[in-house]
Length: 340
Ligand SMILES: Nc1ncnc2c1ncn2[C@@H]1O[C@H](COP(=O)(O)OP(=O)(O)OP(=O)(O)O)[C@@H](O)[C@H]1O
Image 1 (cartoon, helix red, strand yellow):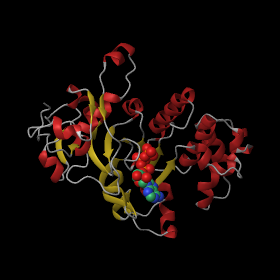
Image 2: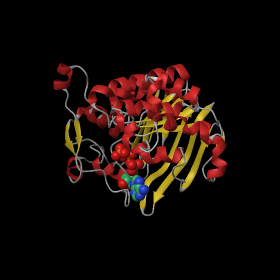
Image 3: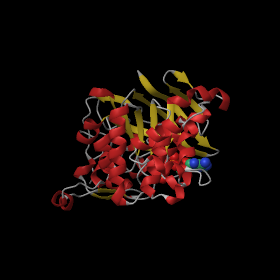
């Protein structure tokens, strides 16, 4: 039933607690977006799933197989279960190889000898002509290179694709076409996808579910309509308030909640709720007690916040636009969480 199950995933780099207890499931054929600001640990989750990293703790299960600590050799049979597309196609494609060799490599690693036909088909699927197989990746544009990495990722028909900011290094003019391509391929081929992104409009367009990450942990997850319609966590609300909307009139009327300060260091995360140092509505409990994730609504909508009640009601920080964070919290919020 699930293409991916993460249970309490932990990934530390020495003292850096990049990922600190992430539990997430992706149903076969569904798209889950992983959002959160830069440095929250999204790429580290992605790299752990494809086992470019060996997790410090927890479990990674692909199509029912626990791959958390498998050796390179024992991972080989699971290559068909998952592929990854990186942000920067220039950095992820070996310039010494032809496009054909790059796209066909996953099949060769699975001991398939003649890859010409599948490579041509994979290129066609991503909108490139078969002749591109003879070219070198550096002769291609950024958008074409990203199509090559998508062709390579999908040639083995993986059950799960991890797409790590697949369009954010591209020229704005080609971002939409690559995003459309991914959406079409996902619909036609039916793979599940973990879509890591900053771009909330892309999330609304592509994702079935959304998981919101803050400083190594998930603060909220659930169906897309719930996350966009009734976001419960103050961090999710702040993220949504700052995202651009397509309508320029609505855009001008919007007043974002600006989170002051930078993301705290994952070396020494704040005690209690990790978001409390920047939260406009934090109360004393938030500074000391770690909030557990609880289901608050349909579709498994979960949130980890003391201030949200079991039926999902709670403060909406979008009613308090402006700049928040750092010392301002100490003086602007009181014990009931109401700003003075
Ligand atoms: N190999 C590493 N060694 C030490 N620290 C690392 C390593 N990789 C990532 N980190 C740290 O882990 C934290 C999470 O990084 P990660 O790249 O996963 O975040 P992210 O949410 O994907 O950010 P971005 O959107 O900028 O890619 C950051 O503080 C980062 O500096």
